[in-house]
Length: 239
Image 1 (spheres, rainbow, N blue to C red):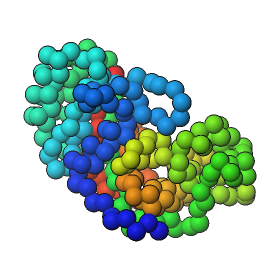
Image 2 (cartoon, rainbow, N blue to C red):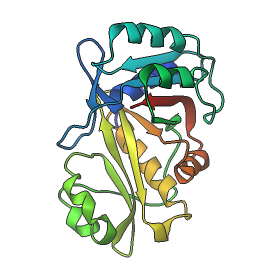
Image 3 (cartoon, rainbow, N blue to C red):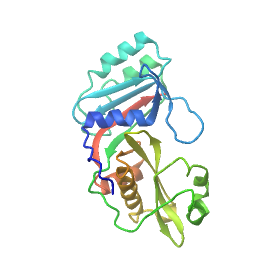
Image 4 (tube, one colour):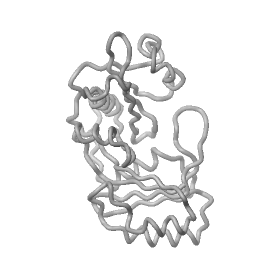
């Protein structure tokens, strides 16, 4: 175990960790690309809004959004109320979409994986050295990412990984979880076990483990609820 001091950031700090993990930023704190650890670049959304449970908001804009439009959006962001329900859209959601002439938005809850969460059953770490042992069958696609998406924790049944949680957005302060469970093995609590194991591995690095999802993803939200993750806010993006 790491002897580093336990980090206990507040909800606003967690939202800052979250947006920095999701996207790369330039020297002006403008969004550039999605922060994927593997090779390749995908353009970031034009607008990010993080609403927190302590009543603060955090907004970011892609590098090509005009300054005058940024100023308009910032004024609206400052008027957002405290968030208590992850299904509630931002107060000014329609105005954000209209000003940006956006047709598509994403929204979802953001969680911290607490210190006390531990896996209820044995899990294993998947590394470049042992990947061929566990990543066969329906998880063969993960072989190309395993060098980059670390830590990677799996629950193994019959000699193969059936549920995996790995770091899919990585910074020096926080990692975001990427969770996959094979259809035939869902509903058994395996996802909660690998999330707990992954969070433990991340904390041993002195880094904060974060878990976020979309409001439409009922299965992912169920994992968060069953694992008693700490809700700290809601993200909202316009592409």
